[in-house]
Length: 372
Image 1 (tube, rainbow, N blue to C red):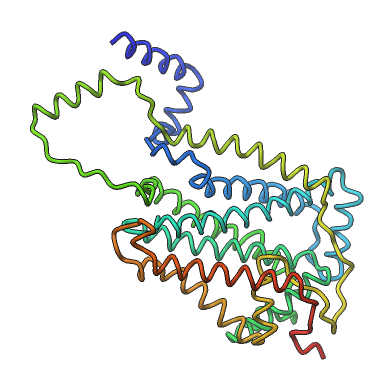
Image 2 (cartoon, one colour; image 1 turned 30 degrees about the vertical axis):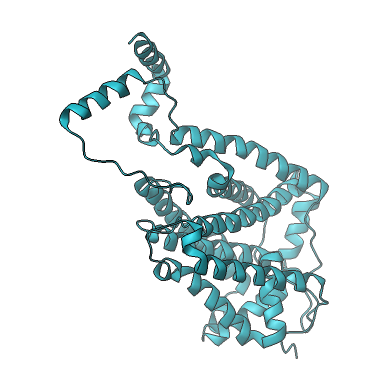
């Protein structure tokens, strides 16, 4: 009882003054819900690491937007102004670039973790679907950011996107009759896609709180038998007497993510200084001499072998397959041993994408489009 009183007094001291005001007015107590111990392990913090890296990308992107000019004749030159004349401009651009890379890496690892651990199973199917849509929006943000550089690489990426859009009858989106396409890309990058991202991310986090963090796939679910009122009272008494037992809460989880944030920021700054992102000259039309950035290299290989239509079909199959995962794997058991078939298919797809990516890295650039 003395330990309980001391604990309550300590909590009360922390909640005095400004802290009590913040907790009461902003309802932060709702975040202090209990989470399983494994929630603080690295595999289960990949989603949070993705969010922290994304936050760095967004903040640095806002700073860059003050000097960027989204016009074809000025875009490339405006980035050079940022790199050479704006105070700390090169550093900010490096932070933006490398935090975007870390965001995509952490996102891919997070999706793989959720898939391998079966965290998409009932009742979390809806959150998996939201997560896949988030993945699609992130890919869109990464692509539009690549094109906004308006060097040869960004220009050729845009031409491929225009060709792909044409297969769906959406080539008009890239028309420059009234508004330069670069302005449309800029609007998508800084307005449309971020709004979609924030909405989906809010739903995603809300569902995580509502459905709780999934259990480990190798941990058997405990079955709680019915107990009498007397047994329940005994259990409640035992719980009161053991308040000192350590419990894991989301606030602790958030503090760990905060720590990861400092590590990520340090890594990004070091990379921005030691390996600043390159920028090619303004693009030339009628040639194709570059390869896309790493998330799109596998598509580049497919396109080399099967053309634009093959790349469109492969991308559609991959995205549709990701959406369909919880509908194919409908069993209640999340253990890997009971899900061998779908885990095998997923790993085979991941390995195939990795092989296609490696092939593209070491292959020479080839002409995929009719540049005449």
